[in-house]
Length: 248
Length: 248
DNA sequence: CGAGAGTTTGAATGTGCTCAAGGAACGTGG
DNA sequence: CCACGTTCCTTGAGCACATTCAAACTCTCG
Image 1 (cartoon, rainbow over the protein chains, first blue to last red):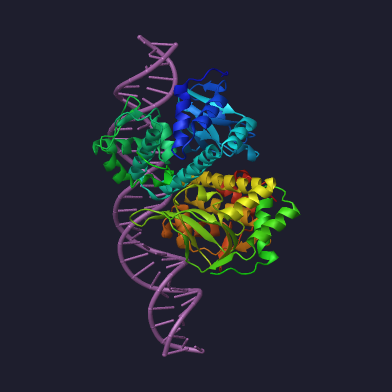
Image 2 (cartoon, rainbow over the protein chains, first blue to last red; image 1 turned 180 degrees about the vertical axis):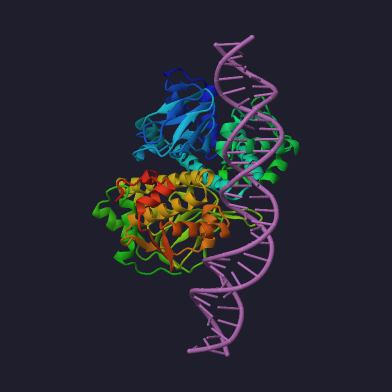
């Protein structure tokens, strides 16, 4: 939980993410890395990084590991409203509002750079393209949220789960975390159920359907998608909503 | 569909909305009104204001009437992802992305001020508090989207519809469009169903349940909520997510 | 090896959907 | 002002997708 050094390799993922939106200059990239250096924080799996109702404070740039944003109802029902993947910037501009409307928790051990408002704003002021990239990131997150609304409102369980897989693979590919047709997928079925608005039991059965249709292999916290086009078809997935300048 | 004069009364609703987030000075208010003057556009009910896949262009500030943002699936299923109410600014900063990920359509006859990027940005640059208010508006919209995700994922039909009523009443009250315990509610059950992810038939039955529980009166395109606390309870509604500085 | 978390299975239930049709309200033109 | 078409609302019946409850199985880790 303390500041430590940052390797070029881990900072790279943030840069890759921003470069999905804008061409970041080498100077700006260096400044960004500089700003993150010495501000890396680690947290263990299950740890709550922010809590609904808290005063908003710092900006986080995820380096390694997975986290989730979620909201809960009084009686314990929980909805994961977004996955926070490596490279994602959590809550740029969040300091503008008084209190958080959702919580954030680590799914796996995570590390992230934590910047305060001044440090973050001086980055934004220093390079207009970098600032635009951050804004695009925020707009992309808003667009993901809209797509999830469509997903929960109008796709059935099978399409819905398939769509989530498509989104995650596409987002991970953009930051270089997909190797061939496989990627790490360190999320339990309990959390997958909370992300798709399904019960754990039905999620499990839906996964089995996807497996027997040869659309996914999910084992040992690793996802393999042998035929991405087929999965996209099943999900009616179109990556345009992510607003990447180009999708590989 | 052409530029026309703007009365102080109609511009007022935009100002009221922004003032829910920040204290806007009289000078900034005058500049805002000035910028909108002569750029008011009207559209008729059912008209599409923007289409998914279009190049993003102008910023719209809704003055009168209701509109919706929506997304559709190939086979025609439709999900309304947000209501656009008087005072709402549609897509500040939208010019940063290439293409729209959703469509916008008027539910009723609408009027709105349409600003291009330069005009809008000069407003933002001219007054820091005004700029912050616009950013808060964007963040509030993102928060609404998260709440809708929770709504669709984890609330049942009864709670879900009740929650939508609570949200709309709260948003309309913030811009002065609630008179006592009643407000205009010009939306068909078809659209209400698409907003709540229900079928029209089931939405209709859910409305009847809410009526017989004396939580709502919905007639002649007017909504009356005799006991707002009771409706909030049924919906598990907490207005904090709207991020208004103070809620009446 | 035992504890605990996560996954899988079966069975019964229920919430919400589809299909189908009738009724009410509204706008337009004769 | 009435006739008509259209859109919207309402109702009934049967069905299906997804839930709940309960229990067994598996895997991991200390």
